[in-house]
Length: 231
Ligand code: SAM
Image (cartoon, rainbow, N blue to C red; front, side):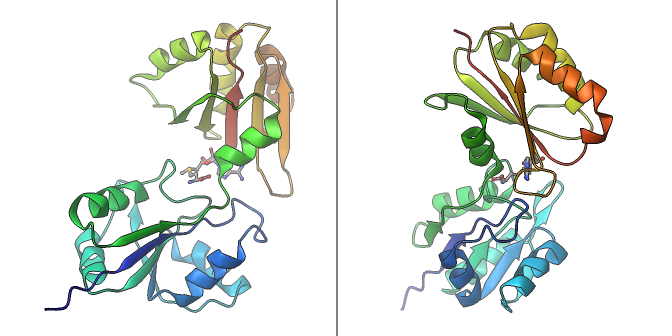
């Protein structure tokens, strides 16, 4: 009996600027049998730009991933698949991690090859000028349960803290940070990275809160928040 073993490529895609694709990412997306994506219309825009006509299938849902058993069967059949998300590096704060976890546990014969590339986390951190020799990444803060505990942690953290925030909660979050983060620590809000209205705002927690309070038109798009560690 021949044992077939497929390959899953984890392929980062741009977080805004469509030029942020590596040559290798384009080649892999052209070569694989199927691309697992989040929203086909987002992935098709990218494919059009790079003349990729590989079939796609929606793989993400609000609650997690879909069709996992079908994907597993394809990998067992020796197929080459690529996992992409709408933006950035799949599996970083997105449900793609569930697939990689399952394959690592149940299908050790499948090769998992992760390509380096765009991520809002590293892009924000590198633009911030805040030390990243040690940092704590919190992903998205929970909406209710556990949120206060995390703010308490941020208030005393000696490490740089970084998290993702949505447009709906950014003002409230900055309000809370202004109450708990002392003036000798810098706070950075990086929004719309790599896009036309890219902006990196840095100052004390009160400065940053006031900036967005005065400029409501800037409360738009996607946000990464960074808080310098306590000295
Ligand atoms: N896996 C992605 C990555 O590696 O960047 C992150 C996925 S997470 C579901 C999406 C969040 O990343 C957004 O809500 C926002 O907080 C952040 N984000 C994504 N693109 C961004 C951008 N261009 N500028 C700022 N933040 C961004």
